Image (tube, rainbow, N blue to C red; front, side, top):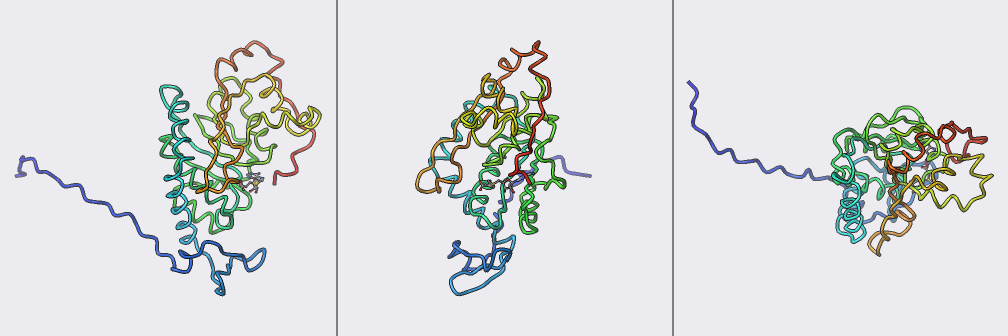
Length: 280
Ligand SMILES: C[S@@+](CC[C@H](N)C(=O)[O-])C[C@H]1O[C@@H](n2cnc3c(N)ncnc32)[C@H](O)[C@@H]1O
């Protein structure tokens, strides 16, 4: 017969897995590629092949650097005030487009590290997906390590949302933002989207003719002010300043979108005349 006595079970301490990278890589992140297409890197006088383990190490270091930074502290405060319940419903998924090659770019590593931190801050309950046509095999291994599902087809950011989704699109081509908004040009769907990306209002400095042909959805959202945005705080010396510059969190406040509920012309789908040539 089983004893009915209660036993105190000590929680086992979970050890953080150590990432074994060579001391040469630890010492020197400032590698150069052997040539344009090579995965081999030159560290001082040594040539080596970079692996997903190395890239994971770089990302962990960048997460640590971000965690310690004033930039991240300020960003977190902004998110807690504006984007978490009760101010907004809980986000379910993250979709990341245009991060670049994490293996090859220091900037992409920082941006990817921030996205991983966002997973916790936003208490993501669903999944994290990513796509960039330049992702390498090493990049895909890194995504898998962090439980990020790589999207298999080039959606050109035309994904229709089915639940509250954060679209993480740092420094993406304008046409990708346009495609995303067009695919979700619906009063209910727009309210389910948060876009972390370039500040779309900046583009209104371009001529209307330019926007009409390349990104017609940027015109109503900016000029009619149905998009609200919060600029990222500026970075300090610990984080290079070209990584998160001009980025902001943008969303469609429901009351602003609802103001156009009965305006059927507003919801008519517009056609781009030319696809943004920066979209691959
Ligand atoms: C200006 S780069 C930005 C890269 C990186 N986020 C940064 O800030 O350095 C634009 C990125 O958009 C990606 N891109 C182009 N077409 C795309 C598509 N159809 N879907 C997703 N990403 C795309 C490019 O491969 C490139 O990595």
